[in-house]
Every structure is written in C-alpha cells, then in structure tokens.
Length: 497
Image 1 (cartoon, one colour):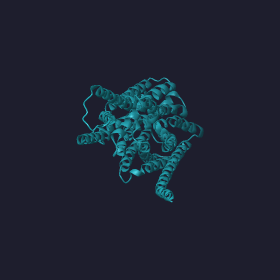
Image 2 (cartoon, one colour; image 1 turned 30 degrees about the horizontal axis):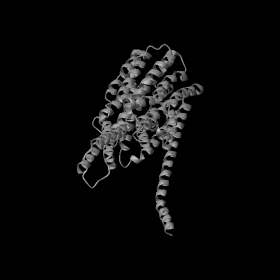
Image 3 (cartoon, one colour; image 1 turned 135 degrees about the vertical axis):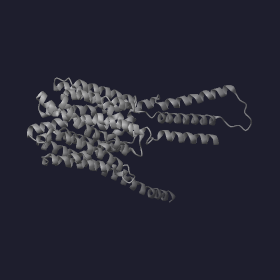
Image 4 (cartoon, helix red, strand yellow; image 1 turned 90 degrees about the vertical axis):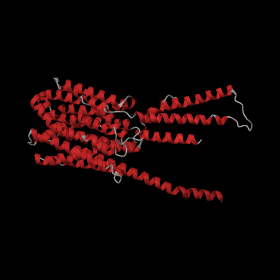
C-alpha cells in the first residue's frame, strides 16, 4: 500500500504540472503570435477607414453607402467569431488561424480589382471578414490557455498589436494610396495580411496538458476498478487454492469495467455525447454573463463609428490629409499604452479584484471623450481626443478577454470569446451606416459622436448593475452562512426537548 500511495502522489504531482498553464516559456511566443495577429486583423480593419474618401470619390456614393464596407468587415469578423472558436476547439487553433489568414489575404487581393461597391461588399466585407474571424478568436484564446497568474499582462501585450499596427500602418497606407492608388495599396495589404499564416504556425497546442489529464483520469479509473472487484470475494480463514476459471472470470469483469470507464471518459458514453455540447455552452445561462452581454451590445455600437469617422471628421474641419492620418497614428500609440498599463496594473494582487471596475471606468471615460468631439474644431484640439480615446480604447480591448475569463472561467474561454465577439457583429454592422445617415441628414458629425458617447455610458451603467448584483449575491451568501449554525442549534434543541 505504501508503494501505491507514492505512485498516486507522483502521478497527481505530474498531472497538476501538466494541467497548470505554463505562465511563460513558449507562452511568450503565443503572445508574439497573437500580437502579430492583432496587427494584421484589427489594425488593418481600422486602416480601412483611410480608404473611405477614396471609395466615396471613385464610386460617387454618399457616406452611409460607403460605410457599409467597413461595417461588413467588422460584422463578419464578429458574426463568425463563434465559428472560429468552434473550429479552434474541435480541430486546432493552429490550423484555424492559418486557414483564416489564407481567406483574408485572398479577399484583400481580389478587392483591388473591384468595379463597384457591391463587389467590395463581398470581397472585402465577406471574404476578408470571414478570414479575420477564423484567425482572431483562436489566437486570443491561446493566450488564455498558456497564462493564468500573468493573464492580464499577457493580453495587454498581445492586444497592443492593434495600437502599434495602427500607429505604423496609418501613415504607410496613406503613402501607399498616394503613390500606388487605392488598388495598389489593397494589393500590398493583401500580401501583408498573409502573415497570419506565420502567426498560426506559432500556435503550438498544449498536448502534454491534455494527454496528462487523460492518462491520470484513466489510471484512476483502473485503480478504482482493481480495488473494487477484489472486495466482492469473501474472506476465508483458511488458505484458498487458486481456481483458474474464477480468476479468468474476475479478469474479464475487471477489463469490462475499465473499458466502460475509459469510454465514458473520452466521450463515447451515451450520456456524455448528449451533454458535451450543452456543457460547453452552459455559461450562456449565467446571470453575470447575460448582464455582460447586454453591456457588450451597447459597447460595440459605441466603439465602431468614432474610429471610422475620425479621418473624415478631421478633413471636414479643415485638417489636411497628412495630419488626419497622424491622428490615427496617435490613436494607435495611445492604445498601446492603454493595453500594457491596464494589463500590468490589473495583474497586481491588490488590484485583481478591481478588474471589472477598471473595465467599466475605461468604457465610461471613452464615452465622455466622444461627447466632446463636436467642440474640437482643429488639429491641436483633436490630438488630446486621439490620445485619451485611444488610451481608454486600448484599456477595454485588453480587459475584454480578462473580464470574460473572470466571469465564466478559463475552461470554455474559446467558446466564450467566440460568443462575446459574436455579440459585436450586429452593432458593428449598423453603427457606421447609421452614423453616415446622421451625417447626411444633419450635415455634421455631432449627432454621430454624441450617439456613440451615449452608448458607451449605457454600457458602463449596465456594468454597474452587474457589480451591484454581485455584491448582493455575496452579501446574501454571507448572511445565509451566518444564520445557518443558529438554525441548526435551534433544531437540535427542539429535538432534545
């Protein structure tokens, strides 16, 4: 028995090492791959707004019609995010990211030969958006699998690629349009987006973790069966001679029990096959996740239009093209600072419990910035807006996967992130066209930015409801735990009497 206990202890230690996220090692290469993915996906999507005026002039269309291009890219990316999460969970994150990179690159290249806006709706909006969806969710989820203690910092670094990419690509895209027209610029961006395949190659799965858990659980089942079967043999005081038929029967029974347990573990059991899908998406019914989903719907509407119309608004108030592109670069740099600082701060032990509060504060301040945009009529006044809006935008982008993981746990993070980004789809689709329609109706951008600011504020208010609900639930649990011993004592006294 002593040997058996030592073996169990060593197996449990090795299994805990396999099941715990590495929090380093190859995980930093995963962060690098996710960093490059966000450059190719989110930064390129933001820089599509640099083509807004070019498309409008070339195809002679109004604001709302042209805005559908950017809306379709964002909408398809988020609408198909659950598909990316599903393929990443069922197949592998590596293969899914590579497949997405190929689709996105092809869509961007064929967009260079567009003859109408409808052509761009399909090539850039559908093909490129679908490729981005397949690459984005698995790349982000892989970071959560490799990190636990330093999760917020890892996500802050990984998602800062959006800001760094915007800072670098905004002036580069402006120069590409100037020298090669918008068609040549799209061809070059298509080649750049193909680097998602390289990012996908870095997504090394945690095979040792899965195999270790499988081996340990099957071993436990075997040991349980081996100890359970001999207990059925009656004990005799005298010596027992071996009976070969009985021994063979005992072995057959043991092997049958072990086989059944192994089949149940790997998912071939009838009950597990029926409940595996429901367990994977069981978080959808959690009250905290439902409240978070409502908040994300308001957030997604508010965050799309301000970026799409930043350059057109700057041009409308007399800022030249070069300085308008510089505003996008400043927005990107501020996003980098927001990603890393909020990621690092919320990883501190004393601040971990304030992650949701930090996320709520970033969203509220972002909405406040949008409401002041109509008062900013020059480049010097728009620079502070780009700095502050970019900083808080980077903060909430870095905290979305962290808050999601805190709400639902890391077990189903891939599927959870897919649902979270799926909720962005419809607001991303309708926000820029509605903003363009308001510009066409009113003749300025005040209503567009004010509506975005209101949506940010509503999202923040919904998060306040979540915090209050959590506080009420904790206080209720504490009160029930406090009064239960007295109730037990009273019942005991009544029983004595």
